Image (cartoon, rainbow, N blue to C red):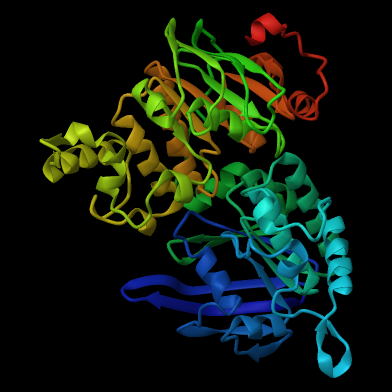
Length: 509
């Protein structure tokens, strides 16, 4: 196929960092090319160069056989390039239609140039319908979930009628149903001749959707895989330059007695529902469900972010949790979904992030000992293999995987009894994912009870000892290891029962 785009020998430096080292990339009309690699491999930098965010230091960009200069986002749009970034670029004080048409609002009324709001809402509704997103176009973005905001970003890109669409981790905030719809949209766009560059750490998506996979490693081309060559093992081997044996630590399926019991938990979102379940000592209980099922609200209530009336029993002792302080005092910790907003102080150094929840441990006469803080931080960062020049580096300067490790380090230094992971590997590369899975299994083997909330079906099925599924605030069932299949999880996620589901209410509790 004739390339609609060629990037030849792209070089980019940021100070002393050589981010791109002569990278080549091409794509044809109607083709979906996955761009994969570990965090820091250069994927986003290469695409930001194409999208006009960065200017290359060397190399050239050819569109339709002609050399072009893309020095701004406006240049990229003019050449038919549209970019959906991993980090949301929305204004949450504006409604959906205003976000989709921001900066290019249609006008009417001749010289009066009045914004044509009916047209704006009508055309926005068309794009939302393509994505299967049923929300009013006059809804403020602040009222939408992260997943819905992500879909609005994609709708905005589609409304530009782009010839080349860059999707950077488009499903990182989406659940199975939304992801499936997005992949269908990608297929429809391909069929209409749009070229799709698809960046994702979810390798099962790459396997499903990509015609080719271009792999970057350390800012350079590591190789290209054809459709027939795209497999989980081939992708990982090329991305990390080595074999990753036992990518998933095999679940044991062994469920002990209820070390941590949650009885009749009620959340603010679903006040009429009561959720009861238990987690065995050393067990990883996966929690699946669609967006809006109430999983995050459940986690936040257990951790005391939201007040509920649940009864908790931990190691045969009743526990009262009315605040996060209560949860921390009892060894119940939460690794939140949005680590940058809720799990870290990104402008604060690693050392202070790790010691913040228990400063009294590092103080004498109300004066914090930086020396004692540093000793603990260095020790736990070494244990978790946090890749950073030192513990005095700001958390916001780390990759996603290393930021997640710092959130973990914060809690591991406090000897957890119960760990709640909400989307533990969202936006993390395969190498870091493998390490996170190892850490979770090691925690379980040391006797920690783990609740893992995940929208990644592959992760849920391969990491969990059992899988609990929620639908609209209620627990629809818990699957044993032998019952864990994608079909069974999805049936429960939409409120149905499964053929394999034999769990009684007593077993659930």
